[in-house]
Image 1 (cartoon, rainbow, N blue to C red):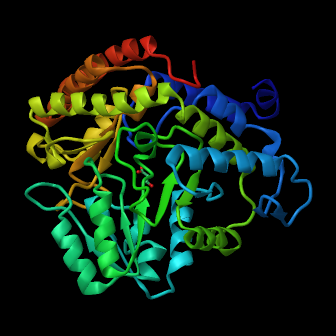
Image 2: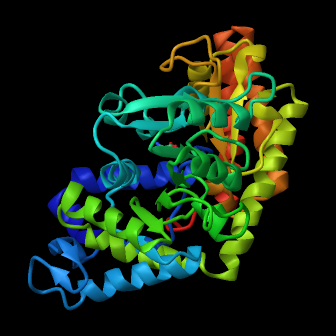
Image 3: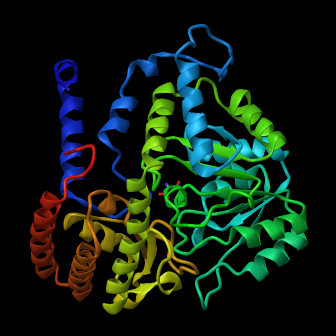
Length: 420
Ligand code: DSN
């Protein structure tokens, strides 16, 4: 940091402040994690200086002697880890990766079917404000109101009625296992390409803690920075040669220019880490921790969408607690517990002021926390939310200040990877 501190002390100090914030916070946002020092090191390298449009052995710039090797290593590691024949490690992030799937298999105006955003789908699965909802014809499925789970009968009926060219499964707020074989059967019946967006659960799949879409989905998209614990980036994977060719063409030259080579190297490092036995234990513990936290919250009267979790994520409907998601998330943040407010299925409130909170265990598990810490976190969440619901601001401030002190004691005992 010395040269950064010399050149730009303002930014250097802000980065240090963010390091301290991340170290001192119980990070419960389910799409975030702490990358290792090795991943951070690879990200901050001279690889950022190099342009490499094209693919290994077929680039549009000279000087690819090293970059070709780095990208090939990343691809081979992705193939081995997920058991696929093809991987593209160039998408800049999850949304561009998903856009590449559209470009590969659809024309503007074609029908795409995905989970509606308020039910846990992603913007790029055809939601109205996204280019994918404006330029394609979106059909949306949701969850059943009584179970909070995807209704596969509804998915089948919609698919057979609308005959989408592309079906997305996966999303951003799904606390339950995704039934890839059932989606694949429906996609086959409807004549659609099935895309599994595993951004949230890629690390669980790699670690054997969630079933894999390989052998079921035609194409797989994932970010690399959530449970997979790599740098911000994305990958597309396929088994079939023709699908892979179409995806490669869509990523470059269809959508992107030069790949971010420093990210590619860091993805390769993260994939190596994810292939180890430690990572398998990590993935299992993420799920064990999420179940422990869900149980604690349930026992304290929190209403959980679908009644609990199978993975890393818990979606809480705060309606019964008499507090909306946004003020709860803000109060929890002041107590050192970082969550995000989120729509819940059939939410009567607006997306910017919804009824729910979305939390998860990837980051706290990376710090080495276990079930007893999850129970403590559940208790703190209850104390803060209950104090807020009483409507006495001074009293709530006292509770928040006390909990924040206790949170600091806990975080000091569990150093965060990459920051320690
Ligand atoms: N922003 C991601 C998440 O938080 O789940 C999805 O793109």
